[in-house]
Length: 227
Figure 1 (cartoon, helix red, strand yellow):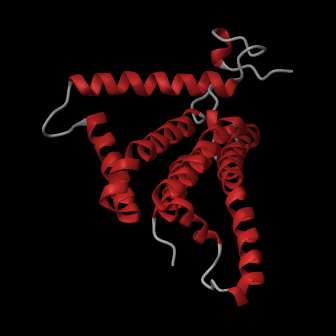
Figure 2 (tube, one colour):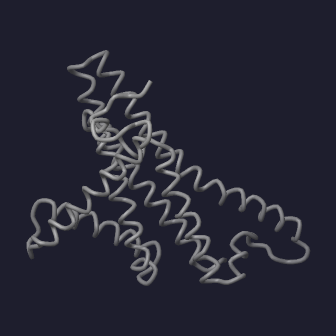
Figure 3 (spheres, one colour):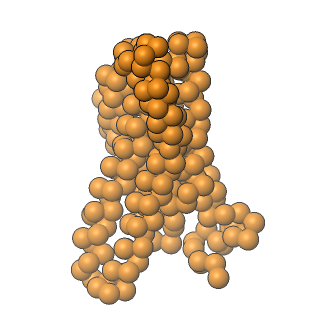
């Protein structure tokens, strides 16, 4: 039995999954907002311009502090796009009749896997075959070969787990928020949902920041020199 939501009027849930329709809706909404802001840019920001400038400056600072000026500027468009898309997708789940695209594991995997592939690609692009040193640990000698092999295997498993943890962490928090709001709306419709809604807003912001922060750290670890 399919969950009845507002956008089911426009989309057939048997053909278009909710996460895809709401993901497209967020993308279209952000494009429209961007075009409107572009036409009404002011020297002294107001309203949405001020809101987005705060986000952009914060993500740019985060990128440059962890990746340096060169790489921070290069990866800033990706990191800022991830943060804004996840943030708006999370917030959409708080609107009655709507769902969050990030409450679906497929949406999150579609963001986590490209991040994983990108930072691995950048590691080999920047360091060449020397990128393997990131997986060998601090001791590199013939005598330490068994230890190097063990550390290499541990690092490989750790890196392969990164897209999974990015995906599941965001999915779990967004799904839990949605379920808790639904349950409390039935138990205490006048009091509890308002409190949980406040926590939901904080969760939406924190989870968008955590995903972006981890993506930044992974990229920073790939382009920096191995020690």
